[in-house]
Image (tube, rainbow, N blue to C red):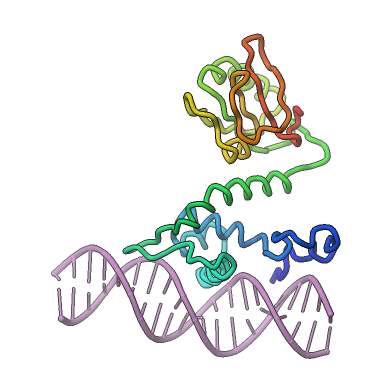
Length: 203
DNA sequence: GACAATGTATCAGCAGGGCA
DNA sequence: TGCCCTGCTGATACATTGTC
């Protein structure tokens, strides 16, 4: 069907990106891997990504071959993740969301027509301060845009994966954010800061 | 223990698309 | 153009679990 959906890039950029593993791996496998790690069920994973069960089984076989690890091992009626599988799960989730952001990106962000979903991670306090006004503005200026709110764990810094999964993180100034090398701006007189992605319309 | 149900793995045969 | 890879359907074998 779509053989080599991602392998064309390995020809176009062989000189500069020759060493990148991503050039040698079908990106669709990442989607299959995410479904398998999330659901731990081949048939249900196949249904989620609109593949047949044999196709998902074959994808799992290729993934096992690539990682040289079972990833999922039988446990009674279901599957359990191997240690590698458990390590991969947050990485795969973040990677898929990053890829999703790439393909959703457009040259011009039109808030009126956009139906993009943004993930905002914030403390309860920050949410109480910022979100009412944000929702009012969204309703008026970007009616189809959706916002998924994630609560920031109290007293503990966010991991890099948690930061990467968020389009916007609203937190107190000085709050330690792993890997937060992105845009950061002071939002209110209460000294909140908001690291956001470079692709974010507000950046 | 026998049986049914469920789920996974694998095979055959076929088709589509990229690449040399 | 032929090869290779991937995905499809359909079929089958096998393992596990639940029920009787």
